[in-house]
Amino acid sequence: MAVESINSQRCNGCGICVQSCPADVLRMDGERKKVVIRYPDECVVCCWCIAECPTDAIVLTPTRYNRIFTSWG
Amino acid sequence: MDAIRDLKKYTCDVLVVGGGMAGCFAAIKARQKGADVILIDKGYVGKSGQSPYAGSFMVFNPQWGHDLGAWMEQINRISEYVNNREWTQLTLIQSYERYLDLVSWGVRFHANDKGEPVRFPAPSGVTEQLRFEENKHGDYVQILRRQAIKVGVRIMDRIMLTELLKSKGRIVGGMAISVDEPILYVFQAAATILCVGACGIKPAAYPPIVQLTGDGEAMAYRSGAEILGKEFVDVHISRRDIPAGIPNMLGRKQTIPPGLEGLQGPRRGGHLFNAEGNPLPPRPEGASRYMFTYLETEFEVHAGRGPITTDAPDGLKEMTGGACLGMSLRKADGLWPADLEGRSTLPGLFAAGDALGTMQNGSAYALTGSAIASSAVTGTLAGEAAAWEATQMVERDIPLAEIERAQLYVLEPIKRKGGFSPQWVTQLLQNTLMPYFVSYIKRADRLEAILSLVMYFQEQLVPKIFARDLHELRLAHETKNMVLSAEMRLRSALYRTESRGNHFREDYPHRNDPEWLAWVKIRLTDGRMELCKVGIPAAWYPDLNKPYSERYPYRFPGE
Ligand SMILES: Cc1cc2nc3c(=O)[nH]c(=O)nc-3n(C[C@H](O)[C@H](O)[C@H](O)COP(=O)(O)OP(=O)(O)OC[C@H]3O[C@@H](n4cnc5c(N)ncnc54)[C@H](O)[C@@H]3O)c2cc1C
Ligand code: SF4
Ligand code: SF4
Image (tube, rainbow over all chains, first blue to last red; front, side, top):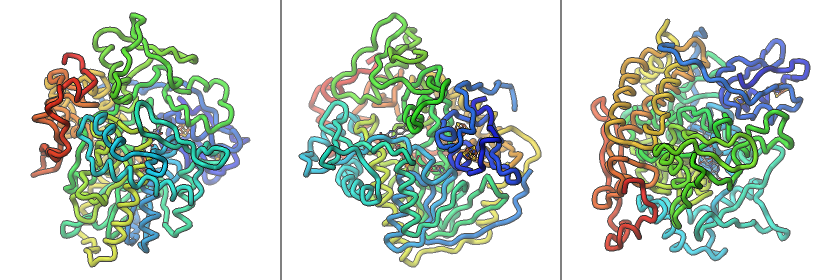
């Protein structure tokens, strides 16, 4: 996984990263007002989210695993 | 599963789809001409698409000593003569006004002590470009977003246009989905401008095109518009260890977080070596960097001299191809322009930016900085022409039957109980097209074999793609569009029986001027994809009395 985790202590729920993510990986948990990683497989490690997060709440690693290729799916 | 319950209808004069450089210019200019404008983006206007990544902006200005004839001569030659000279010239001539627009809206360019813009020479030749000033508080596209809002454009983010709506042969708007809310959006417009950017198939190495899946071309083609330029591939390479070789992106952050340094792409200027330790041959004078440097690596690998490495100072050194898989050479592919104002061949439908096939750079990228400048120029032209059309008595009503037809199509994947996931079909497509001997070094037998696979995807898998939620509904439509685009790419590559610029055919390694000073046009006829050849005007031919080697400084392998 590329986007690893969100530090929910730090996340202030501003939603900037949700706007920035080109792959719809991140979503706002409306009740908690915290960001969650909803579709991690889609992360393309573009770094928009970490570049824009005002509180450095997002943990991103350069590692990216490809989906295992199967005969149907 | 999110059941889509509501249908929301919006009415406007001009619907602009996609909010990069082209879409923002189109929306602002249409609004300034008095039109009521809605601008939608499947991402976020000001952050999505390729526009935020562009660094250099080509400006032609006779007052800076620029000579139109010399610029045109260089571009015609590097683009191997199949550039559309009318569009090339228009982009040059109008680039200065668009630069002035940007400056007046607050976009900053590198300037000297006197406040004059610094002009950077473009590689090999007479042309020049300006550079966007690094902007630490957001980039210039966000300035465009603010300008659009200021002039009264209605912006709607995270809405994907999914199907065009037609009435009496005219495009009267479109149907869109949201990833956030279970709502179908119907936009009713006197004119629709597709500014949806380039068309890729989500290659791992090029995040800027992850949401650029050829939606515009696919929707337009299904509605009867014509498409071109699919045989000229983008040939960028990347470093094997970096999933995202995009240095300018991380440049936003003052310091690169520890552990992520390796995400920086290969430093510019690094040399490439084959496995025998020999440098790749130097680029012949007058050949396009974007064609030569990158295509050459594919040839080396094909000859068994891979892997290719770089002497860039940081990180792993091994290179790999296919960085922009699925994408065409900038401005080559897109909607066939019916005029010089961004109209497509379908009434009511316009295109601008990367979505319009201006062919201004012909078959090989000739003019750095011209892609983003052209998005501004074509956005302006289309925006103003669309606003004018909205003042005419044109058809605007959307018949109920048309809404029902589109609704069935758009919702089909989410209504299915099972089938194939869009992720799997996308992966299949990527794996099928990725090998160098399919997308870059082409030959009839291989193209036919791959086309038969892609037609299987088209006929057997695509109709069975299913979506479990709204996120997947977007993926489902993206995947359908990417498969269609792959078919266009393969058929065009088969059809063009010569090599030229970024299109290399192993079985036809020469440029064939008597036959192929022409473009390949695609359209839907009786349910089938039909291709035809359209010759460029004879006045644009190179001097055919000159020897071949003078017309074309670059030799393909096998010539
Ligand atoms: C790293 C990088 C560096 C570059 N450097 C330069 C440079 O220095 N000089 C230069 O001239 N060019 C450069 N380019 C190319 C240039 O950025 C593009 O040609 C240009 O930005 C295209 O602008 P556009 O407005 O046509 O499309 P884009 O900016 O790509 O915008 C398309 C928009 O359409 C939206 N969209 C797509 N499909 C839909 C849909 N179905 N519904 C709603 N919205 C949709 C997307 O979300 C996106 O926001 C560079 C590109 C990259 C990636
Ligand atoms: S940008 Fe940072 S602070 Fe804001 S919502 Fe995202 S993770 Fe939270
Ligand atoms: S790195 Fe890019 S794709 Fe991944 S979560 Fe962040 S913004 Fe989204």
